[in-house]
Amino acid sequence: MAFTEITYEVADRIATITLNRPEKRNAWSPVTEAEVREAFGLIAADDDVRAVILTGAGSTFCVGADVTGIAGRKPDRPPFTGVTPPPGDPPPVEDLSRRYSYILNIGKPVIAAINGAVAGVGLAVTMYCDVRFMAAGAKLACAFPRRGLIAEHGIAWTLPRAIGPMNAADLLLSGRTITAEEAAAMGLVRALPADGFAATVRAYVADIVGNCSPRSLRIIRRQLALAPLQSLSEAIELAETEQAATIGTEDRREGAAAFLEKRRPSFTGR
Image (tube, rainbow, N blue to C red; front, side, top):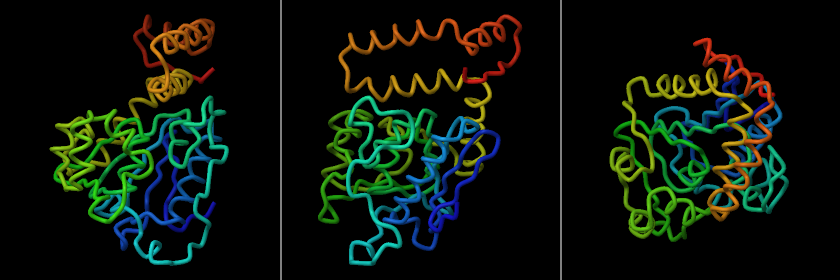
């Protein structure tokens, strides 16, 4: 599939989506949005892919929305206009089928590799990723009020749950810019040295892919996505149901055998 504003690669069971408009500092356009969604659809349908890295080309992750689009530039592809069936598993609730929340419904870990500056919608999208790594010294901003905007794309819901209500209010109401180090202190990201950043993130993802059952990852990711929407009793009931279904699986037997034999597991996802 030909993409114009992202690149999509699969190697060693890891899919990498790269926002690829470095001349625009990877500003998010309607075309970017449509292509990212298409890429996640490919990932959901590809059993060979076991984890995902979302990153940016050049020295920036994503500086936010493409203001030329706001000024009336015609997109080559239509923007998202409503709720559609997301790629991935059938959503148990509407909350996992919204504009960017569909990322939570991909049954594979999604890791944000924030290689440079991130703001606005770029940050909002990363809030639907499981882990956010950020290059040391890079800048982050929720600049919405400084652009005459509001807290977009569910970030007023996701951000307080990640860093607490006061820290979220600080960032959203001030619109100020912070460093990766301050974001890490809040628990928003994990800061890594800029030197070797991409390789370090990939090694982390490769460890997951090489040592974790894809079946387990799919179910745990669903548990994590649903937990904020459930009562404790509902979360326990789901865990009990899934645990019972796990006992007789190939991956459960292989996990036990690999542990006893002190070797790396060879999981099939079954």
